[in-house]
Amino acid sequence: MTAADGQDELEAQFAQWRHYVQRRPELRQSDAEELEDHLRGSVDELIGVGLRADEAFLVAVKRMGGLDDLSREFAREHSERLWKQLVLTSEIDSPAADTRSRRDLLAVVICAAGAAASIKVPALFGMDLEEDAALYARNLSLFALPWLAAFLAWRRQAGQALIGVMLALFALGAVAANVYPLTDESQSLVLTGIHLPIALWFAVGLAYVADDVRSSRRRMDFIRFTGEWFVYLSLIASGGGVLISFVFGIFEAIGIVPEEFIVRWLLPCGGMAAVVVAGWLVEAKQSVVENMAPVLARLFTPLFTAVLLAFLVAFGWTSAGIDVEREALILFDVLLVVVLGLLLYSLSARDPLAPPGLFDKLQLALVVSALIVDVLVLLEITGRITEYGTTPNKAAALGENIILLVNLAWSAWLLLGFVRRRTPFATLERWQTGYLPVYAVWAWIVVLAFPPLFSYL
Image (cartoon, rainbow, N blue to C red; front, side, top):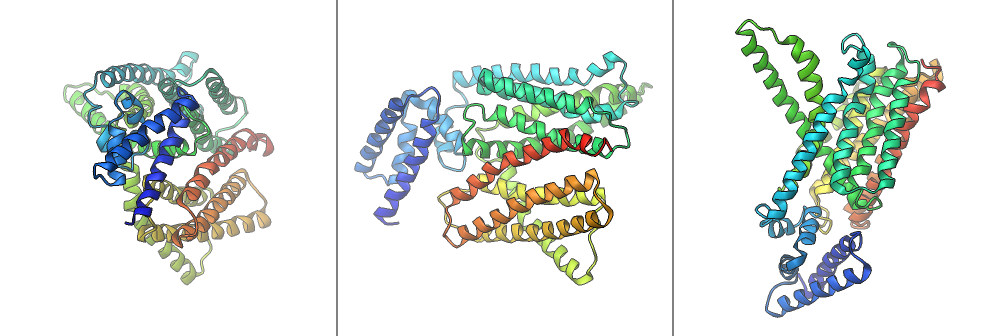
């Protein structure tokens, strides 16, 4: 590496540090400038005694002295860099970390208990979990997600205005889930059950980015949080299945059948509490060097690429049409969302300064394959709507596939530019994080507008 290259990389690190510090609400502009002057002076001093520029920067961050708390936060946010190993090493045993850990534990216990109790509230009004399954299904996200948002808002010290917006969104979701006259056979009931959790998850996202709503980096952190949360929730569900098996087995061995307790208490209450606990686990493990979701994304990217390419070859070979009934539409939409998730989590773990490599080309092949599949599905849906008319399911699928088409198409174009070294990585990252509100808006449209638009069909 030449001296000029080393200086460019050092300036890129300073720019990243400056961007982070300037968006801290507790620091004024003058404080940020003084902090950077202090850091630059320390780096120059270390370079003068023989350290390389990148080494000097890392050591200078470690030497911030009374600013260690800020340095830890900076290291935690930029998890792809060595700052995490250098700065977070002493954090585990610090008194401040112990105090915060105990406060977080108390908060998550309160919020998890609230979520567990919420799912039993309908029973106070004569509702039954089995007889009124449809009501519970469309309100499921309202039992748990407000409590997860409350925990994150408390941890991020969200302002009153933002808390008011989140409360309004959850109240709007409650109205949409319970006011419309939807029958058990209604397609709109199923669409509400699918799209309401998506819409409300973005309310959780507001709580997560409460410390800097406008930051694209914080939005990317929320994407990473979502993947980690899903991984932890899946692990908790697996462990819960083992626990239920033991509960059933050991009590049955003494003549007690705990089926009533498991179905009416352990499963629903434990499931709601797990949603909050999974979020707490993601927050608690931020000091761990690696994150699971990006690692899994790198593992499954080549596998999904192979599956999509094989599907396209089989589709061309057989010339068979695509089934666009409800189950098939959901399956294809989930597949495209998974592809998008693999791309997002790979981007979230990538070093933004690293040059494009083989894995980036593999991601490009994955996105292009998904884009072709999306076009094929859109053509089938459009043909069916033209021939037989529209339904809530087909209209929702049409809109979702158009939204995914735009995202995938521009992602493919930006990835191509990045692989060819013509587009900076930051442009690709900003496109993904900036597009997120589109999904939230569409989810709310389906939940609020589709039932009356299709006469509650």
